[in-house]
Image 1: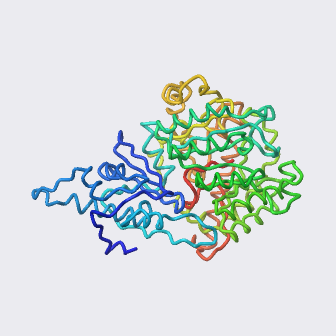
Image 2: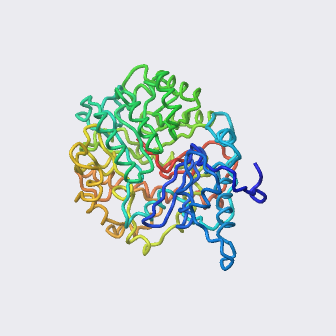
Image 3: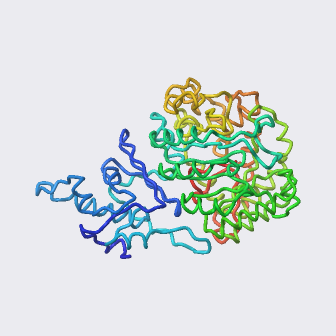
Length: 519
């Protein structure tokens, strides 16, 4: 492929969106968005660029046809500037890995990148400032910013079954939740169609154990047909040859697998199922051999605090993203029994110190936090995307703010349209009014930039009161602040680019999907 500086397009060349790229055109606010699930690059576009993006499809189209549909001004008064700027935008979108341009459909398909383990794919060379690109860099922050006044479902989590073959000691689902029922397939298909009609971008399938749903394949195929970015949360113990072929066809962004230790006995103690580690590792092996991208969810708790680093090192060796989190959620029925597995504050201190030592990503992230926002900026800023751009449902069709925040049912999607829940639910409308300004003790807190307070943690540890600030979050915030400041003072630097082992604590590295939900 020619370089960005010299690439010139002929009007008879063909253009097509990459199979791993997903676009949305939010014409009501004059913004477009495109995301590539392989590179995990994203770009927001202005109104004029969105008009171009809207015309690029998953099938080849002649560039001349696209230009014609745009009805560009060729007049001498305009100097014909619209054509060159449009071609420059096409050039940038190709260079950034979002679209394909070539002489034939065969050439386009040959250029279309696929995910492969063991291949160190060079990220597309970022383009310089291009007319049409908007300077929004964080998908989570960008969507919250864009849609705080225009709520839109960007990502949705669908629990397809309450069945689970494991009984994990830290699970946020209460024991009576596991009534062993599947989501009605017809209802699931209906909701997926309603998500398409709403312009939703991403769907996360979970459970229970998602692969226990008797017709999970139908839901996966419909999600792909509706052009949704697919992710799946699973323990990988039911990955069959059949589902390997299904996954190859639907091309999920990733399959997130729960793995708590590389030592079978330690993993099995957490799942409370003997032999679960072997079955999970067998599933992981199947997925990786098929070049289906996985990530690992490894929450850190009392049962694996001595061995979770082995999972991190294994992930590093395999080229697999490992996500960790030590801030367990209490059960959604407000029972806190599972929190007996939570790390002590002393254990958390050790984990943060390890993170500061080994993770340049973390150091760089917290190093930026002090300059992100000031108190005045926070007054109207939402705490998170719950009710702003995310929603979830369980296997009975009940809809909630998010999978872990369930103080009340927003509506049952068997009986009411998704659109009506999203736009008319009183609890949702009330939640959208809450901003950081409603927590003055937080906005003015000296540890605010290190805080990870959320509605779910507040509610689940205070009998449903999501406005009561979680004390554990506060404690962790001040601990994080102290240890980070001590590290900076002792080292005088935040940059250790040579480090090879990465740990995630409470932030989301830029390499992660903006739509993945930690389970």
